[in-house]
Length: 213
Image (cartoon, rainbow, N blue to C red; front, side):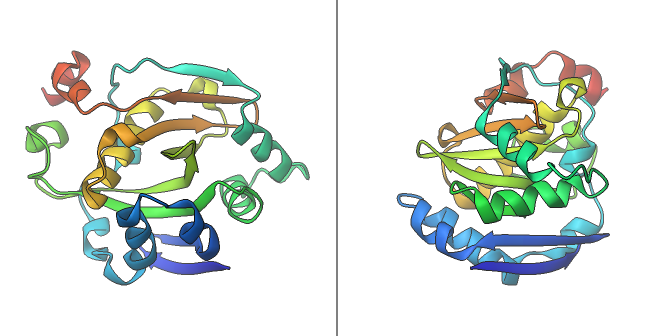
């Protein structure tokens, strides 16, 4: 039911997806289904060895962020960590969701953004190389594609919004699914923070100017 693919992207990443849920939950999202099922064979691994990474972006984007206590995904994370093992919390939470959550399709999904896919790419990332990343948790909720990142101390995160926004943008570009069909969030076992991604934020964000400089 779960397909496991190890990818050497500077360090080992274990991309996993649930075969049955991927087929049943992607109605209307054929391009997403195809991406999930074929990226293991088609991934341009060399992109992931150099260049900028979404998880290393240290600038803020101006989204309306909503904090939710007791969100479903936080409760699932709490169940996953009930034995108190926090050393491997990321993997434990991801596997638990993939195995027991009926909305989770994939974990550690690799993706990238080419330098010709958004305006001012070279200025924003100070690089011509592709931006890369791995989505912690990919879910389908209320017919929206949700990009989730597990953060053990979610309340203290400064740049998780930026990270998850670019995950959504990358997956939108790879699948050609409009960004309006995506939602983003990050979470721990107590809190979840969610927002609606919009590409226009890149252009109007004031703090981005200081980052570019």
